[in-house]
Length: 368
Image (cartoon, helix red, strand yellow):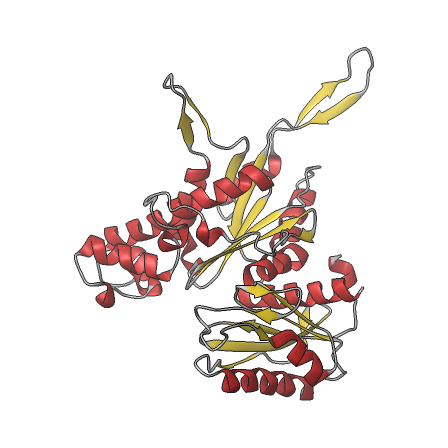
């Protein structure tokens, strides 16, 4: 699929829609064909917001060397993605009561319009041209017969997002609600949803609690990361613990998803740059244990989890546990690897680029 898309000459206009800004681009052959640009979303006024969307796509279209065949982009939910109808959004309040955004843009531009969840498009882009082919390429170079077809994606930013690619295909579920991991239970505070422990405000809140300061006075996650790594003044132990708790929360979420999906996990989003402080905690949680009524410990996952950003763990993951065995009664030799394993790593494309490539790939898949 990656090769086919890389050779495809069709152009798709894309958009990464957030509550504050809209980022426009266009993709051909898995690469941008115009310089991406961002504009304020004007989310407080429907007419201005719709005009911003139309003007943005008009600006992209005028810059293209050839006519686009489709528009494909991410938009927050709740949304009837199949019909392009936007529901009551929390971070885009002007979309109330149901706005037929897809049909409006189709009428305006005369080409098909496809809308999806940003977490879905992020993981689809990483499965098409990012993390998934990267890991499979490393396995091939290492001489391993193992290959992965399933990918779980997590985005850490203003909120906690997720997406699922199963056997190379985007999986949305019957209501296009698959991957809504922000509604999973918060391990450290079971009365809350997981997003409250795995986003920008979670890091700020934990740092504020541990330093006995007001939330409003807590630094942004980038600064807290710099404090944690000793590159800025502040309470280093509190900063490290803020990201460790985020990692434990996300690790619990990924463990639950891995139990069902049994695949790799890729992480992106605005907080993902702080991975050195939270990724080890994610993998530690995945390799954690349960306790039986008799007090016996057993692994919470059937698979062993690896931090694929750690060179030593990556080497072990790629090597596996290859053994040569003999078929009984014959002289035939077989290579056997009894180590079920999964890995977690960071986006290889960057979140916005992964979303754009995911939107591009989804549109071309629909158009055939």
